Image (cartoon, rainbow, N blue to C red):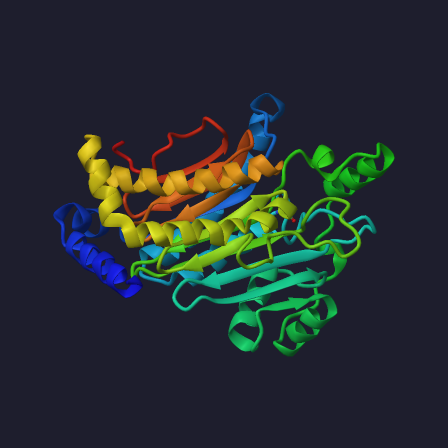
Length: 367
Ligand code: ASP
């Protein structure tokens, strides 16, 4: 009985897959490549930011986008583009990753990062490292040079030394602004959220010309973290996920909630199942709304990301995600007033944005 049901579903799926509307959604409109980045989400108030400060953030985001774009536009891999986009953000003291990371309760910059390749779902992650200049590169070395996925603290640093990484002194990571945040938090007995009001983690997701996707995330975590607290950023499935069958996601926000919802993988899984049912979904929507299929596919993907972020909100968490889809859509979804973000695609999109209403909901230039 069950097998008979499956056979019917499979036959229906095959029949619908050859429908022109589905073919259009999955072939004709696919841009060659796309990239989205974030530099953290949170309470961001345009009136509280000077034009100079805003320009610095935008320049930092644009530098990261340009680095990733150069790779994707010349036919390079999504993995290389993700790393190329994240390294300058880790080196930029404005963002909470690498240099400029927040301080733990004990006054240390403890760094987390993870990366995933959508081709084979290989993944690497590190947590609590204090001497690695670019943790995203070490996370990738865990992926490619070790039999493991996730290394912590001193062990991760021992592995780094064996791999030829240099020890970076703590002064490289420490910034006065972040130190003051820790001091204020302690003096005023504030929570990490009150003291930071924004997160600042960095991440990138990419689709390359071969149709491969990748995702990466890097952070200092949350100000004043203690007891070896680990957030979502280095947790595969929570802060980072990539699967060629569905999408690539990188998250930023209140990590505990992102772990509980399994945000990055949850979005990919819902998209994967939607792709399996896509012909039906697309045809039903085409029949009910007079919109181009390409726009409907984008709306469906955006709706899934928004629904998962709504779950984070329902539990009491906040933050945001960036997503790229196999069709080349580069999407954001956040439930905070702003998210440092940017996207660039072969379809001609090239933007950086900070506050909620800065850009249109669509990533398609004509819509
Ligand atoms: N998600 C990170 C964490 O919880 C913080 C951030 O996004 O800035 O560690």
